[in-house]
Image 1 (cartoon, helix red, strand yellow):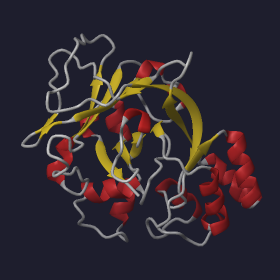
Image 2 (tube, rainbow, N blue to C red):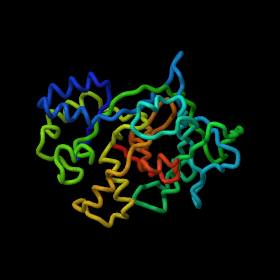
Image 3 (cartoon, helix red, strand yellow):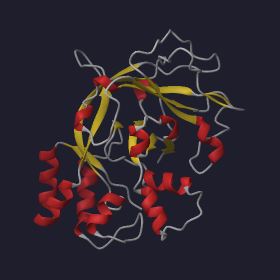
Length: 292
């Protein structure tokens, strides 16, 4: 499979589509764009919407996340929900409070234990915690086994995202029933259009909402296969349905400023079902990671 996803302003994406797609297809494709919040290093007077690294503001009574038998998880990022332009997104984020992301990054054991979506026993190696706005958040030290990542403030901007043609939402519009995760005979799958998307933007980046930007295969398929315990084939409609039932919560790229390198220039992804997001069941979020 070839990975292609991009983000940008509606005007730029409209121009790209009009150059490479028939008019009617371009309009359909543009209707499938999804808003996202792109996160970048804050500078100067930029407003801050979250951080990479540093120390998390855990609520009183909430223990530091631990993968039993392995050790504490490293703190990756915090997202200030009130500081996000969440009203522009199509996922039901909290309007206040903070999301905290943790991952067992191998500091404790030299990378011996890996968090892999296909290994249920390792799922405890990645966590999302939600801290309500009015929670008491005393200063908390990082466990002694861990070296915290350097603190990098993040600023937010809204951009539209374009998914891969084989994403379930897009495939069902242009080629219902086409093989899951594969190219099909349609203008949105032509090499010319895919190359144009790739040349426009090949950066994974840090992001909340929108279409995930995979480094390898579609992350939604990885999650769906894991949830179904690998017991269904790619031709089974159950896998397609499960793939379409997950949305991106957040992704975090490798980041030099924070000293973060996920494999070979990879990225971390947390996905969630929309109902679980509405119910604030962040304990049900699923994690995967990819690298080149």
